[in-house]
Image (tube, rainbow, N blue to C red; front, side, top):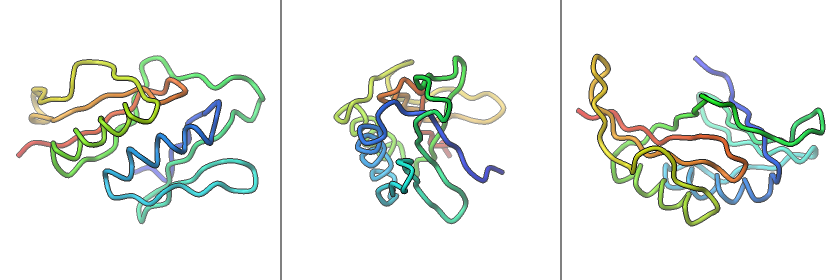
Length: 127
């Protein structure tokens, strides 16, 4: 469905350290910084990227926005969460765990805010 997602970062290098750690727990390679100072994580199905805002203003998070990363297991989501806390992220929402999803089924969720305040989540769909 998505070709790419790009989030603003006030310090791309600091954010790269954070995202290298959390995405590494899900099996992704470290990001690549291009000649413009943006960081890209490439997969077979899409791209996740970090960039200083083009308008020169401070990066800010979208209130009510969340970017979710698929986790293969609850343990992967826990490792993702721990790596984020160890690399400049902050916990938000409830602690990692199972949430009843109603018609979409039960979900194992772990939430963080990245170093620029973007809200992100690791999600595992429970069997």
